[in-house]
Image 1 (tube, helix red, strand yellow):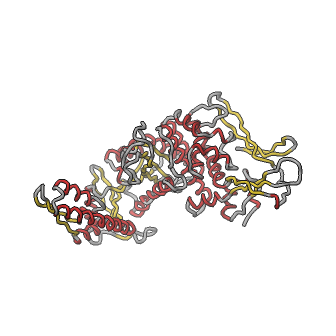
Image 2 (cartoon, one colour):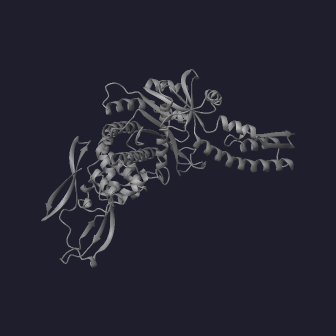
Image 3 (spheres, one colour):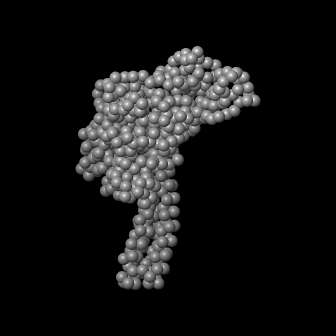
Length: 564
């Protein structure tokens, strides 16, 4: 947007102008909106002044600034190619409005117009009432998943080029979100699967995200049915990963293709997938499942005396063992890493699971002693009780007797438990084809996986860019809603990078939200309607820095005149 002043009816007003491309007419046109009087506020009578509300400035203004740096609306419009009328929002404007709403005040689409009306900063020169839930659903039905993926890649390139993101190591992970869609409602995305919330009564929507090495910036995502596996999702993303690889090279201005490493957890392991990633242009770094044959062999070797060695800075205090093994038919460098934090967490989980299992086993033992359970039911009960947290490895349960009158005896084998804790707990087995990397590089690169987990924490219920509550029920609306949510996560991450703050993303957004305009209505003594003016808040040093970085004075010229 650009800002200027114009005299209307003898008074000077501030105007915001916006150039918009009309896809149907193949020409551009200008939208303009009056922001308010440009003159100095009139003298007020404090005794006759009343507060009538507030307007957002900081949080929304910061995200709009980041969106302007990337040209979010333009990129989405060009990728999706959905023609709209001059009086209705384009695809890019609608997606940006929803993304900002998810980041600042998550709510239903029916509240979108009120949210936009309550802010001084604007995503469009259109009136707020043009942004409605019905308009969102109409646009969602007209865009394809291929067009949204093309928009993601273009946005990733713009982010890397404008904010100089490091993309040598990219982390990939998946999660899912609960929906409250009825079972009888049709659709392919909302399916019952392995819900992260542990609820089995809800249909879930899956989300796979690829993030940058710095800043937790999502570069590519895929919305998928909730009953799909991680491996299948990554396989479906291979074509997009190849295009992203080329786009990131272009954004970084490289003459030769970069050597990028894809980091992920063991849920997406597959020998064929490893080969396909190599063809696509990515090295791999993965945490193998501990039940894998290669993991078992590596853990046995690492348990030998003097095999685990301490790493150098910045990983002082971490021990690891390195070896070269065959993982299937592939030659891989394996690194067994010992984490005290992980060990303590697993021990707490095993202790809690063991308490529950003991109670269930005692109940089963009493029922068997009184003849109130048959052998098949007893076996199922024991198997269920010991299915938690490695309990089957050290809890010994013996079922004897006949089918009609079974008996159960069980005990906790302390020797087996200590052996398991020494050989398996607190350890990860990392597998990579980066054979020339030092052990410290491999471990440090895998720790970037926490970037995706941090992103998921932000998008869960109560987060700063929460995916839910979602009131969509069609696949098209769910896909576009997820696209807008991930875009909101991108804007927040890039705002944090631009501000250069050490605060958490939540603390930063809270500080920006405190930069608001107070609306007061006063009496000037003159005839006519009582004027309403905006008062600027007192700014801390961090808030004043944010006002300068994000150019918030465009929306509120008197903002930087106040400091604590």
